[in-house]
Image 1: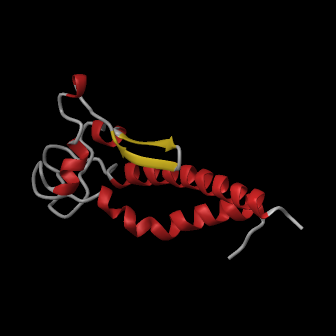
Image 2: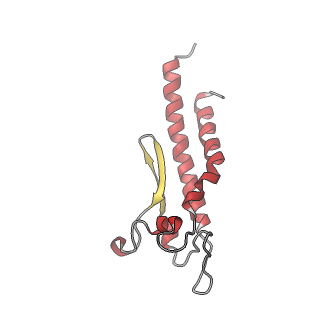
Length: 129
């Protein structure tokens, strides 16, 4: 009979790895979401994700592993962060101008995130359910 403590520890590690995989996938999806090329005449409308102008905002979307999984966010852009740490988050919240949600849309990806994490747990432990 397998050691329950060992199995739970493997499941916890598998869940963390699954979260790292899901965060990497989600960062790519978020970059794609804000990747539609705009120009001076072709701008996003309120309620739409911001269109890419220079690509700096799109490139600022990142993910990183953490002790209990991973996180997805944005990093400062511009020379010494002059444009600001919250540039892309500001578009999402509407603090820069009319809201152009992109980051908050991660919730629509929750089923896929759950699937990635569950798959990793099953693959590493054989546990189902």
